[in-house]
View 1 (cartoon, one colour):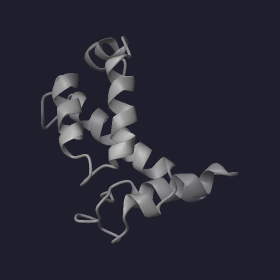
View 2: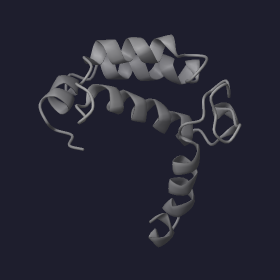
View 3: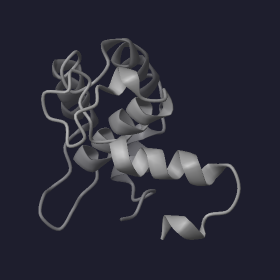
Length: 110
């Protein structure tokens, strides 16, 4: 699927797909890479992916409240996630008044 992407986004998309599950401390990493050794956009996507996966209803689970999801992300700072990125991500999400509407109001569909 990614081979059909044209232009400069192809390499970025492939890199994100390969590495966005790598943990910051490499303790649970498929490729054995630390997120800090990857391009900055990969660990950013990782945090966003986990947050979205937690707060969106899935066939196999109910959505978590955004505060609970942020607590999980904070707890994983330094292991799963880069703590510096967590320190930026959490205030951004907490100050985004659209979060309940986006995630609880059906704005994102999977």
